[in-house]
Image (cartoon, rainbow, N blue to C red; front, top):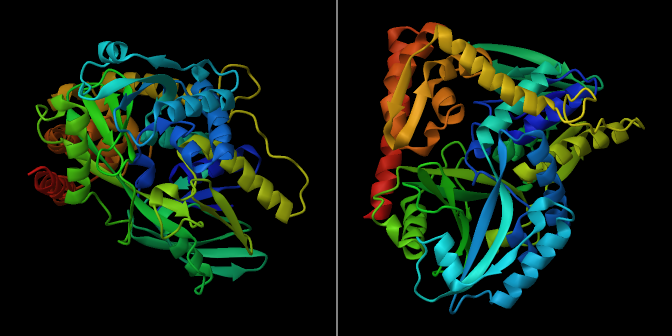
Length: 500
């Protein structure tokens, strides 16, 4: 099997296929979790707002998968308490919210996170004193889960390798053509500057926002199946909220989040149609202004926090549905599997359901091959031993591996925003987790993504560490630093324009 795409869907399919005895090669044109899969709201959730659009099946499925991920990947997925304040004049009356939370709890079944309760105005302000008190009438409390998205995706890729898959990053598919009973793919390794070819019986197109482009490599006249929408987030310095808070914009009634991330607060997200090349898509000043202004209304202390220290955007590859052309928020979030002559394309979907999606890809392939065996639905790599899974073990292995490398690579940087970078983290990222560029290491294998100031401060010393292990000459090292700093400069310009 050739899997195209190193986001969460691609690595999940690669792992599931390898665990079920298939030979697997996964290729990714940039980095693992290099696009949408590292630019999310960092939530594993049932999608309470999807109830408004009648997506009961998606919510039920997501809540079941949320419980599995909390159990099998506790180092990457953690419970988090949500507060949902209500204000006079809200578009969604408290009675409707109460009914939605009741249904959310019912769909969650026996989960410990199914509980919810009403909160008085005073209770809500006691729990979350940073909320704007003007017009506040009360609210609700419920539970969901928060994740480290890129680290979960990368751990899944490492689990796929340990199950027997081969993973090649910075490797682009240039062409797909029929070869016997399968497909022949032309590949270019951009890191080494070499081209090669590989033949496979099956191809899984999990290229996210690029799936239509991959389909056209095999079928040039293929009609588009993806609707791309842009989800922008901003990060503010300071712990402005103690809990996750589900808020409603005053401007247009959209739902957005304020999420605690250590000494920072993550605000998001937008949902706007995106027509640019996904590789060049990023936050716009209008996106930043929208989130910044709404954050200041909901959390007055946000103004004192100063300008955002990060702004980033992910491009959602939504399956085109009946809502296409209308409100992007109403577009279906369910994934769809499209089978065309031995190529399975994964369209849409969300982090929460990535394991189930991978199982269904295998089931579709086996059905196409008249193979009646069922996919192995055990937690990946658990070897039948209860309570321990490959993902959990990999998280422990990651921590132990970094600690072990700390003896050989002891340097440490104390950075703005209360963040810390260890030389051993970068060593582990290069040796085990396929980090090939400075951006790969700092943005997706550490928690420095929270603060642009920390990324700037870390770029120079981290580039020297990587240069030794990657064999970069001085020109390449400087190029890596300039690339990261240049991207941060552009981001800062967008933030400045959006908050002026």
